[in-house]
Length: 214
Image (cartoon, rainbow, N blue to C red; front, top):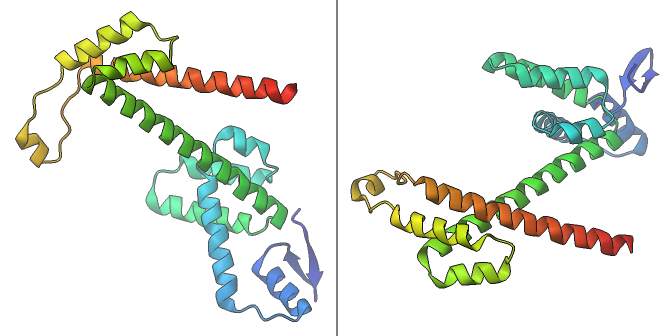
């Protein structure tokens, strides 16, 4: 059952538009229809974002079973109109949640966005190092100094091969906005760099954890 109360024989769900309106009247404040629609639209967007939430973060939330089923169904629907109707239903269920639960949903979405931002930064760092290793001879030494755990022979071999396999400039392709097809060595060098960077970050995180425990 939804949380709520009865007013003149009518059930009012907590968080609904009628609930907000009644509470505003009790407080003596004037909440316009525009404000109510704006809040309703914000909760609707929150429901749409909730469909994309990672499973572990979703499991950590205390959401009604009916809403969880509706979210799962929305993820399965591919038809545009069917998806739109299902998301309206999700929004309706979301408006029945209390403010504390809505805040927990917002926090979970913020956590996911922060994680995505970190992953993007890590990807850009790996791309920068890969390109630098191919372009500059000095970059190999700089990398090995900073990440001594790297297999130096494998790194040097991949760098040499990536330089050898580097495609010649294609003016026609560039004019069409097409990126040149990259070699296997180019991709393997990126993978090596990315794994070493991830390993270094994990080691730093473990050291920080040990310091906290101490």
